[in-house]
Figure 1: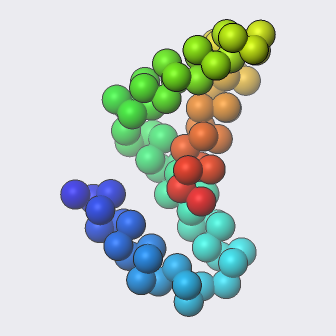
Figure 2: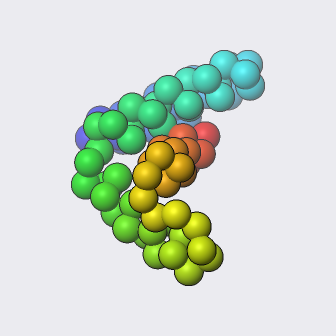
Amino acid sequence: MLLRIGLALADWIGPALPVWLAYVIADVAGRAWYRMAPQRRELVEANLARVCEATGRPTRGRAFRRLVRRAFIEHAR
């Protein structure tokens, strides 16, 4: 429900905002989503771990957590 409200608000306000401000808001929203959605985060971690394992990238640690967090931010954008 909260996600639906946030998306509706973004659709309404987004086009009126300067691009730089829209990116700032999207980045904050993506970081918040990362922190507040543990089940979604686990799903993204599992999916990215499969990709990283197949491509020889780390599937744990700081770099992997940063990759997962970045996925939420990019999706919010």
